[in-house]
Length: 536
Image 1 (cartoon, rainbow, N blue to C red):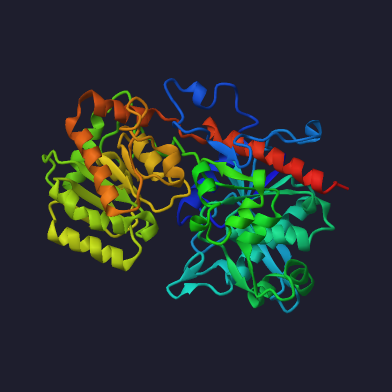
Image 2 (spheres, helix red, strand yellow):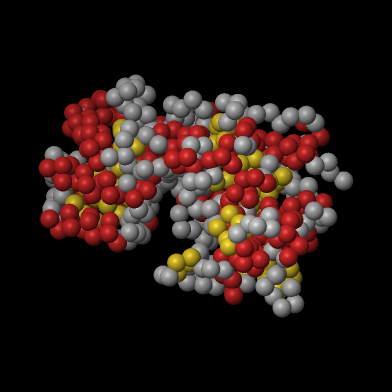
């Protein structure tokens, strides 16, 4: 089963957030599903466990993993490695010496000759094949999606060119594609092109499309004129009704794909409701059992306190003594008293109301009054930064704010904090809570989306709990959860050690479930495509 991914980000070549991490880890993991032996996954690791959630994959309308339908024997089998990953070659992307490059002529509505020459740069790395679309006018810019003035107005053309170039490259391969796996709105032009420009090319038109929504808040709106920069007139006529004022790329992907998923079962349920559906709840609901959630995994090799070179002392679930060294070093680094036994609460991320940093700012005075110390790392909304900095100025011995993106400091906070905060208003999946548990730092989270799927409240489930969960997106609710967590920390003893141990025992790896779930979903997408469109 040949699988091709198209995305705007993939770690380590292009990353602004979790999308890049997921595309990288998933491409590696699904490519290995057909070659892995019987001793892989959770069953092979003594003492590991998946989180206490009903299921890690839910197709709505069924409550379970769906079969692939009729004709299973005629479907392709395991995922053929290496998976192809198409990305833009942004400014600063480092290409290894072993890479090859070749010119590629791409149809382009914006070009005077209706064709643009790009360079296809290719190399294998990390278990998959990277295929960069190199065209400086489109991608050699200050930012991936915009600059200080906002989003680039020609993003429709830019990512349309990415997708069209990917398809043209696949045609030159002269090998059929079974699945196009498209990530977020930037990759959605590919399914529009499949349906409106490449119907006569079986190598592409036969391909099933699976769309993964990493965050529904980003949808890719194009005016009609912007859509015309991406599609030729006859293609635009097929794609849009005559009176349509524009195109919402994510909606196009949802309505045209064989399968659509998001990155946790909880978030999949939430975005079917108007409150979090952001105008697409009805389109998602109409998919029925073709829409669901697959819980993201975590790269357990990258995130491992036993091997993490950024830590002053490494430790493991078997021997956690190094965590105390990490705690003392973090406090000294931030100017806190390392001998103060007061609990340390850490929070890392994009400073945005979605992430609940404003709730923390309002809760902070009460938490500091209770004897807690707060460590915040991130950048983003200037108002939130000013509010948090004001708290740090008022209580420098209790609040530290680092306005930056610092990978190594983030790791030291995961290891050195006593508790980890994620009061997000909504969270498609989240990795911070998984990482903090992996590092023996119980999380305090809002009961939403992937946070609700991955963190079990220890007061509700004393023998299974891995953290502390609050139900309302208010400062009061956050304070109450923090006080429960701090009380548990101060009691210490076997209760606290057991809480840490349960969190460190969870196997979040892609191989423990998500990779196989995606592979099964690809087979189902192929089945749906073939049932609805007979292959020539």
